[in-house]
Image 1 (tube, rainbow, N blue to C red):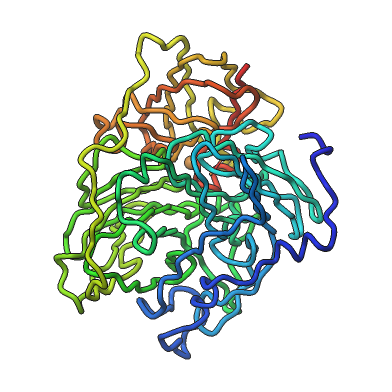
Image 2 (image 1 turned 30 degrees about the vertical axis):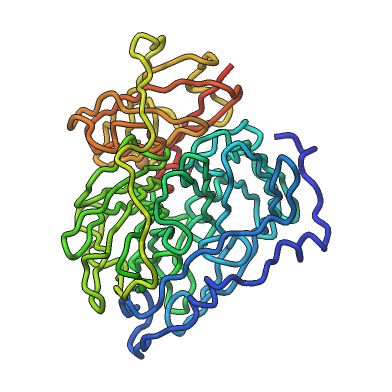
Length: 485
Ligand code: C2O
Ligand code: CU
């Protein structure tokens, strides 16, 4: 990037960014359950003892005819996230997860990001369709004491994105330390849908962490054992360990994000009730899908409507994570059902956003990326480690291509492309089903299998990364670059 975009931060900016703690942190630090004297470190939190913090929608610092302006300060904060301990974290504006930014389709957002941490950072708005200069790629970092302005045109339909740090080689550590927040785009179609909204539209950010006995987060960049992905032993939702959430006996919309570094989730409700999945990370599906389980690889999102109206008030339903590779069994959070305060007039439309696949006849180029791990534990596409100087795919503007990711390794890899959505045309292990048949932006690739995606590259020229979203695989070189020109 050009250094002309960098600006020295003046003291006032630091204070402007240091917003008062939201209710999230205030809630997260009031513990309902006993902490237990024998509880030295991780895994010892009491289930369902703390309320679910709900991220507050951030207010712009200013607005004009075309744009909403925000300031986000990356700074250290001492947070209370496990009982009786203080955990130093790296945050966006002092909370974990960071603030929720709500954008409107067609209306620009500019975020002024101030780096008040100890090393270079890069803010990537994951899911955003943007120019490379605002994409927040791994080498587009800005150092301590500096800032960068990101511009998001939001020329996309309604969807749930998230922003997180993306600095080269240290993304896993930086996200683990707390650098992740939510970014929602709304549009007229969504508003017309009459889905559960406001207090009944709740994000659920799933993450896992392991702590040292002193409450600090356990994570080591040097550990080669992390190259296969770091799994925490304590489960968090919106920054609270296995919280409870009082829900009225009515419909809720939950925007579920797998914000973990490497953990997979296989979600289900303890009463066997299905969830109506209405959206994935690329926005609304063509129709609601009734799902008894929902698998989420790192960075994937699922938006679901859950109807608690048939659940007797005074009873509870837990959101469970089924066992499986990279998973951990048990309840992630508990919904405690209470009577409704008003009539639920929300509805789930039978049809949502039409999906039209890219025509096969438009495909002009086919590429294959073989994934393997070298003897040192480093991850490669076609035998090559990530190199910011190398272009792995030269793409013509407006071309439609098919990319096959061929997984020659014994681990799953969630594949993510910056800039653009794709759809799956072939999965070697099954026929694509349900939400996986429509627009996607991250797709899980099971071990020893392959997936072919079809993708078109309109609008933006320049260099964008694609990579595995297991952050330790990404940091250990499972990343390539495509150049649109
Ligand atoms: Cu969320 Cu390049 O990633
Ligand atoms: Cu991977």
